[in-house]
Every structure is written in C-alpha cells, then in structure tokens.
Image (cartoon, rainbow, N blue to C red):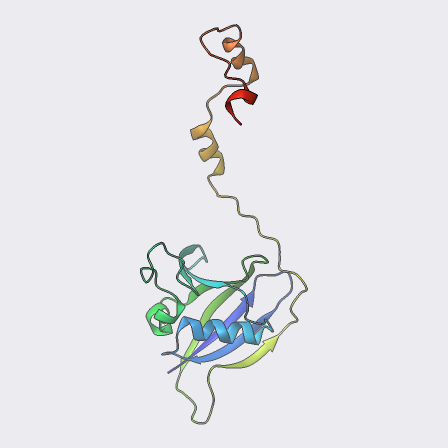
Length: 179
C-alpha cells in the first residue's frame, strides 16, 4: 500500500507538499522525503512527534539515539510508517533543524494501492514557496504560572533585613579562601 501525506509548513503563508511513500518505509524515509521536497540540504537534526487529533505533541522519535544508554531509545529507522500511522492515527509533527525550528504538520490523507512503475517516495504536489526564515515559536507552558506559584517563597529584598547585624555568620573573605 501507498501512504499519501500532506505535509504543511507551520507558517503564515500556505506552503505544503503532498508526498506518496510506501507503508513499509520508515519514518527516516519520510524524513528524507520531506527535507528533499522542501529544499533543505538534510544536514540538520530532526524529530517526529506523535500527537493527538488536535496536534498536541506527545512522544519524540528522533533521527539519532540521544539517550543515556546506547540502543535504548528508538529512532526513526526503527519505525515503519504502518507502525505509527493508520486510518485512525493520521497525524504526526515533524521538526527539522532545532536552531531554526522548521515545524511541519504531517497528515495521512489517503491509503491507496501502489501504482506499478512509480518510484516511491515521490512528491506528487507542491504548493507555496519556502520563506527565508522559520516562524518564531513561543515555548511557554500552559501552566507556567502554576509552576512559578509552587516555587515562590514570598520573600523580597525587605525580608533579607532580618539577617543584618547577625554575628552568627563568619565572613570567610574572598581573597584568602577562594584562590
């Protein structure tokens, strides 16, 4: 079977590519098809992220094993597309180049029979031009205020006055003890 994906750049203007790829190909093969169809050189690190129906990011599947124990973390080459995506699970997020954070929404649009004579993967439709720069991302957690409240001690500069005149602390001096 052939998976047909619509790969949409997360940008203000409509920029997308439709890619046909075999269901037994891996996420690494899809990664290669995506960076080629958008004109990247493929020299940057990338990851896929599983997500829910509303594109909320879940588990990372990276290009390389970046875990503490070699071989413990699964990478793109370990996952055939059919293990991750099907008619019920159609969405995945792709991030290319973690400096510029080119982010793509990848959706399985169709599962069709393979056409004899076609070479896969192939870009079957292209729309829009790549912008010069990736769209700026805001990485603030939804509950950031809750996190700050949890660690807020309620002390300010005036509260430090309680230590003035306290002789129980020795002055170890910087010069003689920290050389």
